[in-house]
Length: 316
Image (cartoon, rainbow, N blue to C red; front, side, top):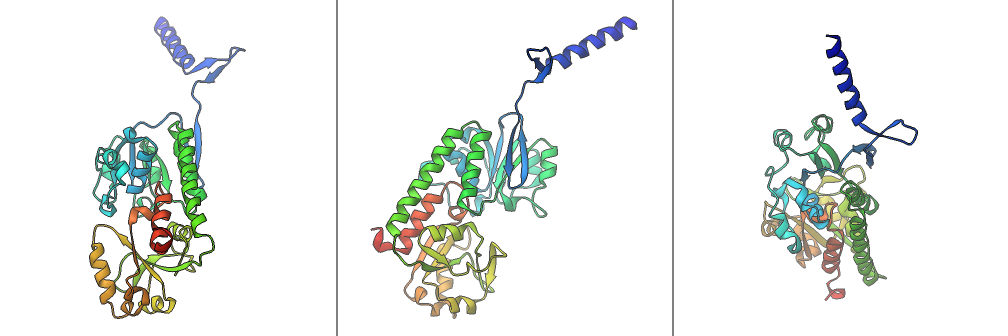
């Protein structure tokens, strides 16, 4: 028995010694360096690069493709809000399996085998996925919730750090900045146009508030969100009477699965209140897919698209 105990003790000593390497003075040190990123006040630690990723939201998925990280993505979600990838990303996008049609479910995520999630903030919380539970299952989470250009650029750089492609990520950020700067140069001296974001109708207009990332994109494209003064909500419903009072010059309509964009325009034209607007009478409609106004990889694309819609005479 004594020999057995000595043997076990020797094995244990070897295991412990194998967990680190020796420094010059003979003391043990850890062999792995942990990366820590700040995800809006929540620290996320990495001892190694993730290998199986879920991207929750078409904007999150397309960003990974744009950064050359398609091979890491084992599933995505929220395709019911998507009008599809930009042409340059379409081939890679179609290679990625769909985890769920719509918001990701707890069961689908926990059984996916993923070790990392990059996803829209509305996928988490009281009505979504529990981050603490996911991390207890060994799934690291980085939420996509930028409300400023600085924040989305930092998200991109963080993704670059996590996947050891920091130079590529920084280059992508610089390219976005340069394209947006070119639009700004063309818009120099123009008065901002008042823009109503029309996501959907019903008992009023469901629209973007002042803290919504879309409001920032509108501003960069030479517009002004008609409801930028609503700062306590990113999304809100406003009355038709309030819309009439603000007299938007352009109606920016979100395009996603249902109702169709054709039906939305028909509903706007047939509405007794909205049909009184000069912008509706003159059909000053600009259409944008929903994923294009979410923080991700399309900032420059969206600013370019909106600017052409707001000032067609400058971008012919």
